[in-house]
Image (cartoon, rainbow over all chains, first blue to last red; front, top):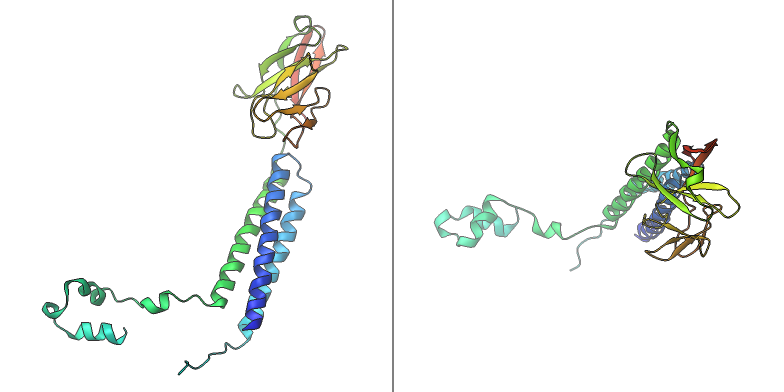
Length: 70
Length: 176
């Protein structure tokens, strides 16, 4: 459970970074500078692949089902 | 169905209270609807991450595919009709695109798109203060280079290439 919570916290943080990358990419695109935009897209893609990797790792981990409290 | 819904289902239609018939006809696991597990939330976060990546990738693709559109030279004005330190306003490259031609002190001609790079207000030339000014949020641009020097704009004005042939001034393209 703590592993899932840690992954969730890191995932939300990385999603915030991706949002920032999107705003920077949009600003560069509107300024007419094409050179840095694809690099930001690659970084964002790496973050997304990392998220997919975490989902895959958690999928291999058995879900702990606790018995209902009495 | 839970036990309550099963009890309702076994009762006849006439025995059910008016407000509960729909629960039998449209059974729904209300208890499960309120629960979102951490794994499901993590899935949602990763899918949102994918959406953000898609948006960034789309911008990268558009930036790679963007090519400057070649436009035919357009006559702006006669050089003798624009005094030194004055501006001439015209439209280029499309009829909806406002532009301005500046004759700077010293005689040099420069031209810019009139759209402010902050929030697209129309900028105008103030010769007495030797600056290009945006009245919306008091942005100031250098008339020689188009660079922002004060206020909220962060990008330079879109510069238009000017070519002089004799006394005629032509707009021949935009600086990418």
